[in-house]
Image 1: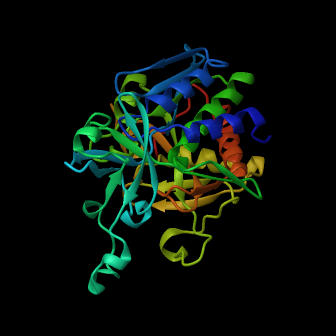
Image 2: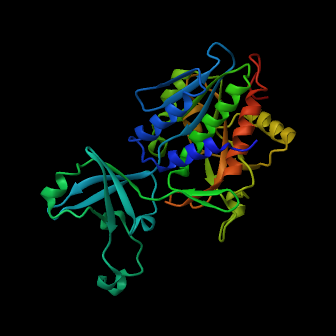
Image 3: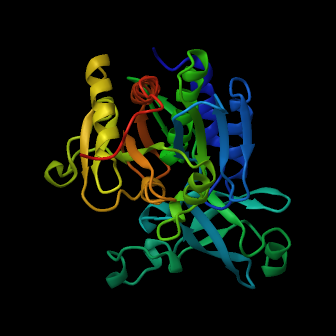
Length: 358
């Protein structure tokens, strides 16, 4: 089964919507509208998480979690000349934002701008080879002065880089916000397939909020999991593809765009659930690779697996080239395989299954 054209078009639309951490209401709203076509229930919570469920009274209770936020920027100062200074929302390589166009999510609508930096011709010779720093960059929205800028933008407004969705050969898709609108899509796509061929489980797809800034506090995933109280959780996120020049496979594994989903082993991952996913992949002939995560996974899995008395958690990832850039690349085939693996595995779950290791 391949992603149907409707799902692909929805994914492209989801990628185009601006929604950095804490400001993800636009893509979250679109996700919920899509879910209403096949889910039994759709709702949201105060943290910004979105939920879509089937089989309310069934067991086991399964949570699928893909975060819907993306990295972005936040305006922290507007000077008297009308230039906007900013801080990162999530992890940025400052060199990536130099010279980029932005969309500022202002009170009265989206405002375009460009990120400025002192031109190389005006830099001292010793500064030309130095890496850019966020504090030395600014956003120019074409304002005449500070008063004009402050009339359009407020401190605390968020922004994203402007980047169109493009499709490349071999079912490759490129865009900003692939991390992790892709995970939110796969959670919903797996639920769509389960709604068509019902499992015995109660399944809730979740588009979680604020994952990109959630380390240490749990983002939206922790309260979302607490409220759902699932027995099983499958987190869907991106991982670094290592099939490009300069990638170090000895340190990061061998994960290829188009090579199928990546299954994590380690810290946050329940070994019984991991083996269930492996068995399903091998039985269904779904290609996959394994990623070692000996400490934290840096995903929502870290926030979910210790919630309440503990939740049997797995992490299914998709290889992504050029992560945290405006041109992240994934394979639509990998998205389809991930959704197939998750849905097929859930159909094997029974109410009396034990996920106690050993």
